[in-house]
Amino acid sequence: MADTLTSPAFEIKMSTINITGGNKSSSSYKLTDTVGQTFQGQFDSAGYVIKAGFQYIYTLTPFTFTISNLDLNFGSLVTGTPSLLTNLLTVTTGSAYGYTVKVIEDHPLRLITGSITIPDTACDLASPCTQTDATPWTDNARYGFGYNIQGDDVETADFVDNTYFRPFPIQTTDLPATVMTRSGVATASAATVTYKINISGNQAAGTYQNNLQYIAIPSF
Amino acid sequence: MTSTKLNSIIHLLTSSLRGATRRGNPSLLDRHATLAMTIVFLCFCVFEFFISVSSVHAAGYGLSIYPPLLQVQVKPGKTLTQVFKIDNLTGDDKFFVARLVPFTQADLFGNPVINLQSTAPWLSYFSLANSSVKLGEPFLIKGNASEQLVLSLSVPENAPIEDLYATLLVSTYANTSGVGYQGSLVNATTGANLLITISSEAFPATLLHLEDLSITQGLVFHIGPYYLADNLTPLSFTASVLNTGDFRAETKGLFRITDRHGQPVYLEGILPVNVVAKTQRALLNDSGQAFSFSPHLGTLGPHQVSLAIKTDNANTENSLNLIFLPLKLTAGLILALIFLFTIFSPPKTA
Image 1 (spheres, rainbow over the protein chains, first blue to last red):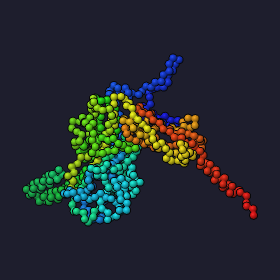
Image 2: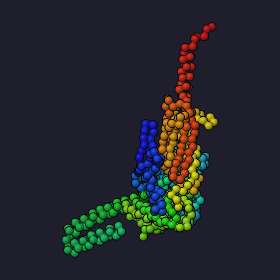
Image 3: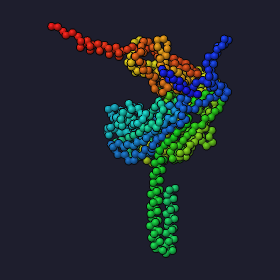
Image 4: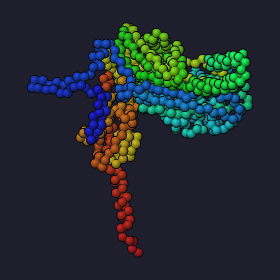
């Protein structure tokens, strides 16, 4: 049973209150009892107790993650001219309290017939970016593959505007990078990811591919 | 499939035209020819429309999972099951793969640090009781339909007494070798967390330490063990709790400000969240915000700010000393006096 206790000075939201309890006394005894906590009893008799969902959120709605487009087809690439694509990520926490969306790639964009890659971007030379630190990438003489994200629950101190990019972490060596996060309920939080490829004139011709994996996990 | 249907329609129309020709009716033949061409054109347009719409749908992803969190306390030798409901929110049939990834670390806000390569021997305790779905193998969910994953946990009699943490990940399944374009194929994964405590007792003891209780906002001076704070400026507090024990605990408790007589002048509940073993977690009020207090003109003198967590398996408390002073008011009065003194001071005599 849940309830909220209030007074003019304070408010306490309690997850559970006892069914009954308190101090009972007579001339011959003094007893403090509590009735209503059934966890111990359930555990002793069944051998297990299961709690599904969050006790401090009362809805039973699911955790939801959507991506607008799973196929990022850049088509033909032109040397020194960045190619851009976008897709939209949305998250609804439902009965969860907070979430993160992380991303990782299996490898840099790689020729399907060989091992030549389009390297992950290092952004502009003046302020190189890393997998966790976005910096401007506006110089068309800087080549590579990277992403920017703008919208709800995005670290705006890092992705300051749409010129700030990061390279993707690589599955075999790195941990996924966080792109959206919130410590609280989210209802259709949406963010747009912009993918950018810029190749040099020395890039070998052919079809380059990789896999990006987005992982949306509720907080506990 | 679409082209087959189109071919069938063309075949029917062609047959009709042949029939008209055999009957030797030229005007009927002309009318049939015009009608046939119109129908073929319309059919082509309609099919093209549906093909393009379906390819747009095929490119998207939408999945929901319930429950997002499962907390289990179980004795060795017991078996239990929990249903996870998975909804395919797109209109297209899609293949998914379910798997469990263990984790041991989490950030300050209860987000597990996931390494997709990690594994653990105790993952063998888990299985799916579904007849047609297995962990690690693809399964189909039709467009706008649901699937129930019946997760079974069988703890052996000789299982160690410990906490097990894992995330159930449901990922899109795609054969990447079939992608014919230049670019990236996006895979999507949605997860739900499992916090399992294997124990013979209901409340296995753990060790919590309240740390970093400090003031983050307000007009405050820190002198030795005391904070001097203005009594007209709102204050914000931050704190975290460290679980150095071996079992999960919940952050049930109170944030309290008491006056010099020990009487509470402000109380807030702590948001009850999980702190898994060997991790640290930020504490928030029950609205999910930082603890805050707005003093008033009468709030003066020494006060104590305390945080206390009292759970079924761990207790901890921490506090700081705060002295409220009319700093802004005093500064304002001094400025006013200087102003008045400047105006009404006697003129200098030669």
